Image 1 (spheres, rainbow, N blue to C red):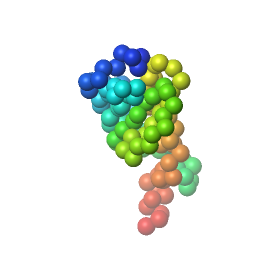
Image 2 (cartoon, helix red, strand yellow):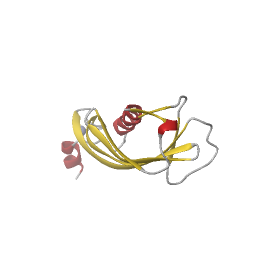
Image 3 (cartoon, rainbow, N blue to C red):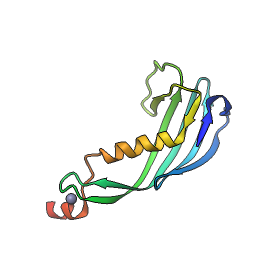
Image 4 (cartoon, protein in one colour):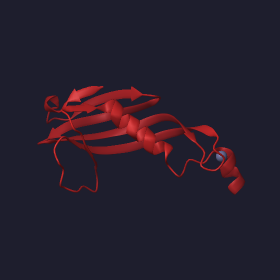
Length: 119
Ligand SMILES: [Zn+2]
């Protein structure tokens, strides 16, 4: 799903989009030159165990708060992660893909049998 920044309204609008087993569902709206997204990311991602390297399915249910801008963002925000894009189009598939990449790099990806062995 791709949306032109200029077409995003200042009122909150609901959306839902899925990619590779994950669903991003929530609201977006425009705040001057910024687009804010408040959404839940949920579903399943296949990850590799950091201890035994076996792959397993990890259940995901995260809250995402994002600021998207196609201008240089000089501010700082505790609450929102900032994503700078280089076109007019917000690509929700790219957002999900980069979340999947960071989930795969998570140090907490330990499979069940390795977790049991730790106890
Ligand atoms: Zn393991």
